[in-house]
Image (cartoon, rainbow, N blue to C red; front, top):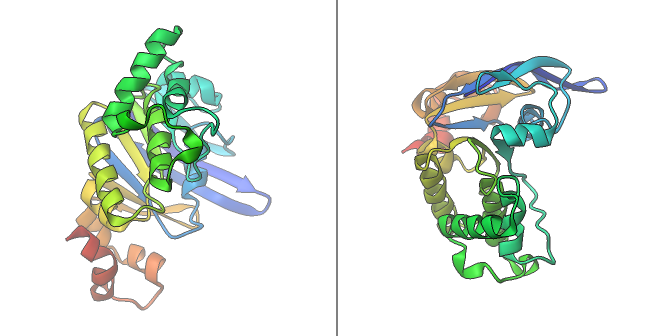
Length: 250
């Protein structure tokens, strides 16, 4: 479904993303992880068209979309969420979700009904008339997810959708993401909540200093020495990482 090859993004003298290559097959949940500052969000922005790339190629559904504007990429079926949620604060939850729905529905009635259906899928049907400004952090995260899902994507890029949530809220989001995948939407996610990553992911890519340093299934990544050193520093053993990453996989 998605093939990003040799993606490079340079800011001045900094190679924020350096020749990164990854692919996402249809029907899977794929994670992109790495230490803070590794370049994960920048790579997301390059893939989704929010940043021009300095080198590389992005193919989606067999089509070269490199350099295409965001709105066109979204119409192809690839959309993303953002770490920092920015809902339309003066609009209701229903109106916010409908903003995404208008990409697929030209008429208000269709967009409105689709937004209601998405709200039910995300567990926000009881909040439809609530002003977005009144939502909790968890509510805003769900709204960000709902607004993206309302565009009827084929591939959903989730950027730290669990950040700032408590354990019970994280479990609810994990369940929602699984249901989204089961509904036919492929998922590529950035996440620091490691037990969620290990629970959800079919395949994981690890980014460090802009480079993909490892990939594999959760068990393979947990036991990869390059991953251990990227997270915990050189000299740490696989036994040490067991309490950091391995516990999340248990």
